[in-house]
Image 1 (cartoon, rainbow, N blue to C red):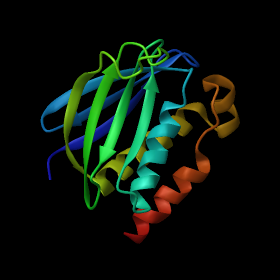
Image 2 (cartoon, helix red, strand yellow):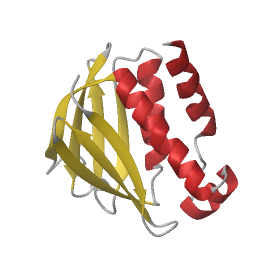
Image 3 (cartoon, helix red, strand yellow):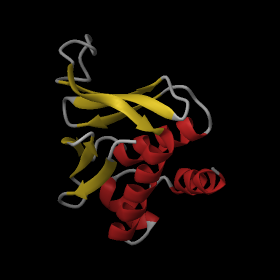
Image 4 (cartoon, rainbow, N blue to C red):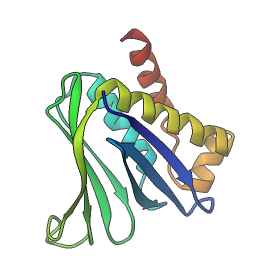
Length: 154
């Protein structure tokens, strides 16, 4: 399996973060803001895939645009596409999309990396209440716990 890693680089508290993905020898950075729940979206996609879903999506908002992560054709590996859109609030939501990266990754690899960045964010903020106060979204504690349990059982 090719190299695959995720980092969640937190900017100014409560304002922004970058998802840094390294895959197949290439590093891609996706900026997101506090308007969305990017970290929760990533963890919930991992949970969907671990539960056996064949597809999932996650959105990292970046005002007014955003990057959609499309997970499709999942079994042990999933085809992932990162597609950036200039304006996710427009009536023509899917207009102007630009493919940032695509390729196959291991489901367990993705789930492990999502778990790692979520645990890192919680460590950075100290606890779920502080995360909520500073980020504006609840920390996905239940989802993180379930991802951890499913990975242990795999």
